Length: 116
Ligand SMILES: CC(C)(COP(=O)(O)OP(=O)(O)OC[C@H]1O[C@@H](n2cnc3c(N)ncnc32)[C@H](O)[C@@H]1OP(=O)(O)O)[C@@H](O)C(=O)NCCC(=O)NCCS
Image (cartoon, rainbow, N blue to C red; front, side):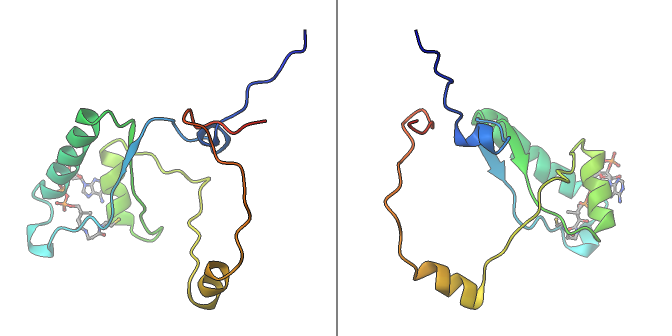
């Protein structure tokens, strides 16, 4: 009997959890109110939403030079995903890609796996 290797889903290939997550964009506390626990409270609120909604993670980006914020995030137990790099497509490159032809590719099934 032939042995078939199970297809790996896209999340497995990308080494990300299969559970949904919450992405946080632009956390900002006005300077006069910093250092009073407000930033932490905001993240506590998002963490509670994540847990209530069955999310396995919270994620966000921070600029490498933003050491105060990095210290803040580490104090909460967050870990930098150093192996990831943000890529951005803008201007002419974005226009070129958007106007290029699309191929008819296989679509993933409801379980997120692709047919062999
Ligand atoms: C980052 C930011 C949101 C933090 O908000 P905040 O209200 O000042 O932070 P908090 O007062 O809630 O601090 C929470 C905890 O983090 C700790 N912390 C803050 N900065 C820290 C640092 N540089 N190193 C270590 N711990 C730090 C605090 O000591 C506090 O811990 P404690 O409650 O045990 O005392 C705020 O400084 C900000 O808006 N910065 C400018 C915008 C920005 O850079 N945002 C991040 C974009 S990715």
